[in-house]
Image 1: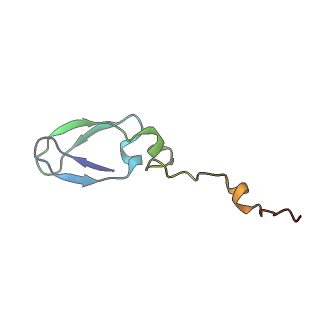
Image 2: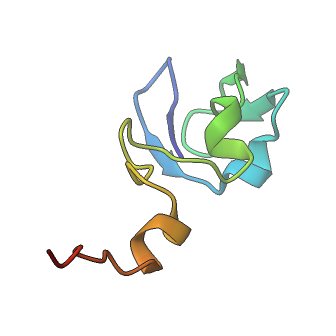
Length: 72
């Protein structure tokens, strides 16, 4: 996740696990300002899809099953 200092706008790339689901107080290395950073969205923190529609439209079992054509 990318967080930004609200005082000086310095941006940091930190792993979601560093902030945690509940969030935490962090401090800017540049200006020393401290603030509370909210945690990532729940589905992102739990390894779920990050982009809407990222899930497959049909289950994998349905994809693996060959379709048969009835002969008449």
